[in-house]
Amino acid sequence: MDIYKKMYFKLFNAITDSLEPEEKEKVDELLKKAQIEAEEMYISYGE
Image 1 (spheres, rainbow, N blue to C red):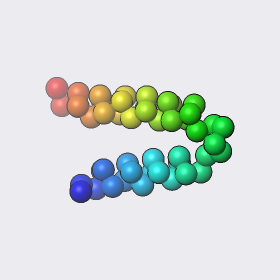
Image 2 (image 1 turned 60 degrees about the horizontal axis):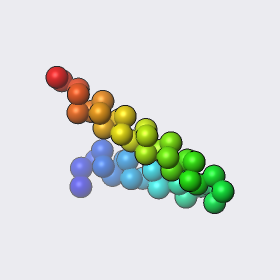
Image 3 (image 1 turned 45 degrees about the vertical axis):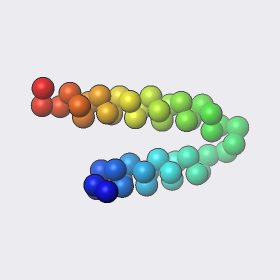
Image 4 (image 1 turned 60 degrees about the vertical axis):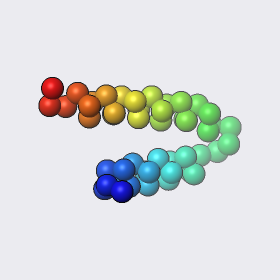
């Protein structure tokens, strides 16, 4: 597994594990949106 994937999972899991259950759904959506934006940035880098 490459280092970026390991780093991503480490941070994502730490954030989601620390949340209160009632906040989890909203934060999950925010994290998914951030993930998509970060992936788009990575993909478009160098174009």
